[in-house]
Length: 113
Image (tube, rainbow, N blue to C red; front, side):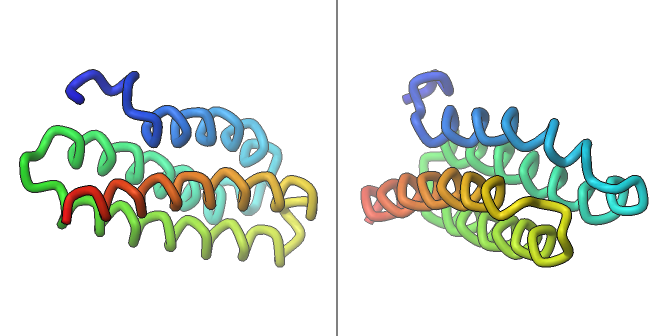
């Protein structure tokens, strides 16, 4: 599977990132470049890890890195919600998208066993 467009987890992550960026850009100015930047960095890092995992012959270690990055992202998004920067509805959508990515990553990890 060398074509990234064929990789469902990559596409789901990419769609999530496109969904999230405009929302993060509406964070209060004081947080856009603090918590917002950390969320954006984590999303980009996760995408890069997915690309790396797809290219490696030994994928398992990199996939675990993806899983750790996804957990960091969940933490940051929850913090944004608890601080009032995300509405409950938007938080629920973020969680649905992250859960879907997590399930796909979990299946990918199991397939490398």
